Amino acid sequence: MAVTLLAGLGLAACKWPVDQGLVTSGTQAEYRASLDPLIPKLSKHEVEAFDWAVSDLDLTKLHGKYPGASPRKIIRGEVREVLDTYPGKIEALEKTAVKEAPLRAELGKITAPDTEFAIDKDFFGLQPVIMAIVTNGSRYPVSQLKWNAALYLDGADIPVVQTVLTSDFRQNGGLRPGGQFTVRLPVGFVRGDEAWTTLEIRNAAKRRVVLEPVLDSILDFGERAYLADDPVPQIERMKAAIKDAKDFSDI
Image (tube, rainbow, N blue to C red; front, side):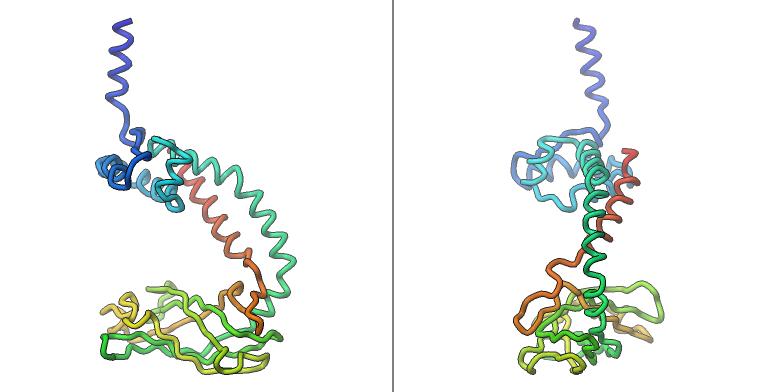
């Protein structure tokens, strides 16, 4: 019996870092104290998998799902949940997307193809600004909407920075079908968003901004959303999660 216990202790002492339990029942500091020493001992793949697994979990949720669990157990739990449940969720969302396709296509006719990007200076410092001509080619009146804004430099295909901006047309009587407005969109609040004023951006020879409407943010004149919850971005996120889950299923 003693030999067996000693052997068991030896195995416990040789436990891999990815199998060490974390403190999930205490404070954030206690949780970090249990996790931080493990990070340098994990492989790059394991760190990426753990970051993915906990990306949507705060400490309370983590403890509720995986009390005292190891990084490996948490990763495996999230991989299993995604692979078991997301395909069915995607199927249901795709049915909704098919029904809403005509409405999505119509709302997609609200465009801002002509944009300019500038970095102004004011009392608070540098202020990035996007100027755009917004055209409502749809048959729906619009009071407000949000844009996904992306900045591309020197002909690159990948944006260097992205954000979400809001256009509010209520003070101008609303954006009616066939209507057009020139809008000024500051990036950041009183102080400009520094991510949009880096030296790389300031020194680029060519700067191009693309604005795409966030379809489920488009509101009618009664300030009701035409699309309650756009399923397409959800489907894309879930498909990406399934791909990640498959990549991390070897842990």
